[in-house]
Image (cartoon, rainbow, N blue to C red; front, side, top):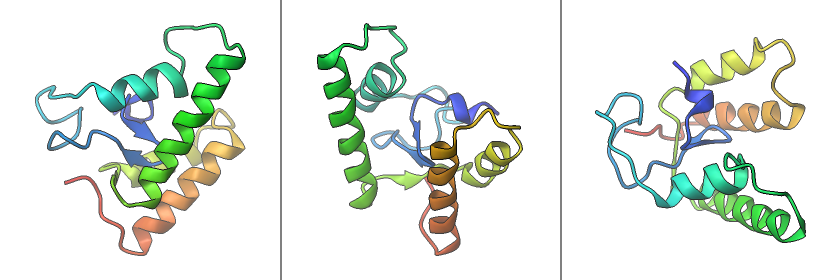
Length: 117
């Protein structure tokens, strides 16, 4: 499925907010704001030098993403259960911090938090 590599996936949540569905099943409809923020700063896919200025921007980006989760401005990933199970079965390839975030997302699902429609 590949959702762990989804550019809109962050800590169990889907940041494809202005487009219906999932990037994997909506006919390739995307948006650029969250995509750029997550790809460029959280995952550093451009391979930027992680100097003091980059690390500060990354920290601010993560805080902003966390704030959106707390404010419930984003939904849980449509495939959060599958991703949770994949993370648990990853054989150590997921960091402890990532597993903690996935635990939290899964707990929210069990408490009735909504998934991405």
